[in-house]
Image 1 (cartoon, rainbow, N blue to C red):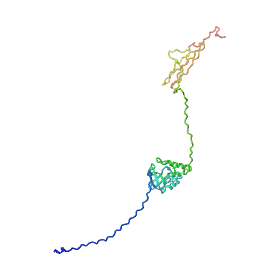
Image 2: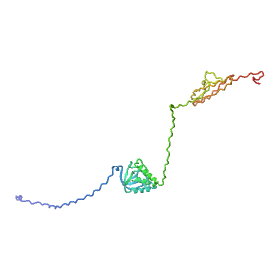
Image 3: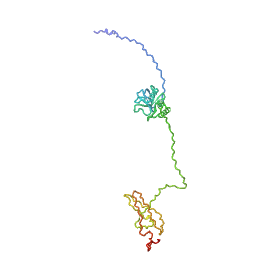
Image 4: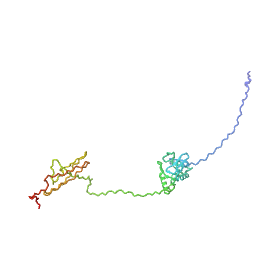
Amino acid sequence: MFSPSRLTDTPAPLPTAPQPRRAAVILPSATPLPPTAAPTPTREPAAFINRQRARVVRVWDGQSILIDNGLTVRYLGLQAPGAGVLNRAAQPFGREAAQRNAELVEGKEVDLEQDVTDVDANGQLPRYVYVDGLFVNEDIVLAGLANAAPRPPDVRHQDQLNDAEREARDNRRGIWMNAPTLTLTPRAAPRPPAAPAVRPTAGLTTSTPGPSPTRAPSAVGTPAAGASPPVAGTVVPVASLVVTGTPGAGATPPPRTTVPTTAPAVPAASSPAPAATVAPAVVPTSGAPAPTRALPPIPRFGEGSPPTPAARPDGSANGGP
């Protein structure tokens, strides 16, 4: 049964958990910062153009090296003797060139300068190599351990390498030890042809001479139609004669060309008549055969012959003994 005294009784306190013990937190001490390194000097902007820095791992021969990224660098502008590697047979001064190259760059950091070509057909990097400011390509050529060999279009420093080869050859270094001496024989410059002398022509006018006229041969033949035959002892004018002859098939007949001549004096009737002069036949200008030469006319009986002496009764001629 419910008791009213229970409402006035103080309830017993609830059990509480023990309070934890608070300890002081120990903070770590501050760590000093490392000293700042001095900044390295930076190169000029032009030094970064077509340049890269690499470490040389191995030297193959006098013209090629292996760098740390696994690529082979081929020296530009020179050709060194083979040292028996990279499918190249060993040649005289090949080991010396490889040894000189190893002394310069093996295990060192070098600067590689690109010209035009980045990677060649063999997968190599054609470059100019510098170590500590020394131009390695020029040093090997200058020592006579390689000859200058341009590889167009990479010819930026080719003049410098050609001068180095010339100096090595003149001093007979390395591969140029037994090279023949090159001598240039001076040659005299050819003289220009002298101009023809021109004579002064005061008050005279010059003109271009034309072709000289060709003299045609005289024609002698039969008289023209309607003309009387010539008489023995007389001169027949050339203009009244006609050239006779049959030209060849397909040939053009020669032109009737006459040359006026001066007629000689007629001799006296008492003197015997001179024989008729035969003129040379006309030679045609084309390929036709020469015309037939006309014979002089035969004099009639009794014309031009001396008179016959009268016979004596005794049968002897007049004027005889």
